[in-house]
View 1 (cartoon, rainbow, N blue to C red):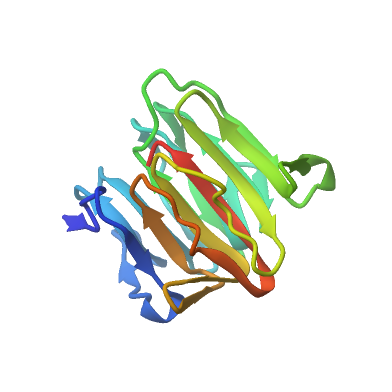
View 2: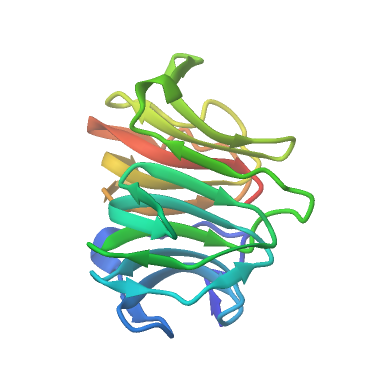
Length: 215
């Protein structure tokens, strides 16, 4: 299966364009943002767990990245409400479930084999945020090719100050405007390398999940 699989081209999806597709597990649906492969895919998705739904234990050979957007996501005895960021490295496994239901942003199969770092971070904790070049930033992961963070932008501010080597963003609050189009909460944009001064936060500002470098 191929969904937005040409990474040399920009891709985007607004919330009103979401198409929910059932997964193999009852009660779990997803919106496919990009995908190369079937169930063992390189994939970026919005995933929705109905209350009481789960997945059997499984591993992720290429790693898994999760941002909890709403509800509570659980792994064993660990429970992660909205705002938690989880980065599980290649070869890790889990048995996920949600008692109350949850919506997640999930990236599968996009980590390098040598990436062994496990990150579980509560982005609601003010101590996780810092000032970086005049922007409020919550660093999530960084190495020599990838930089992943949350970023709070005031109205009219641009998330990219210069050339970027591929980029991806998900709007968490507020809106982003580009090319005369607005992307509100849940809007997703993926960009090839280039400069993007026309992408700016809307009139209420915006909070973004932002990944640059490896896409």
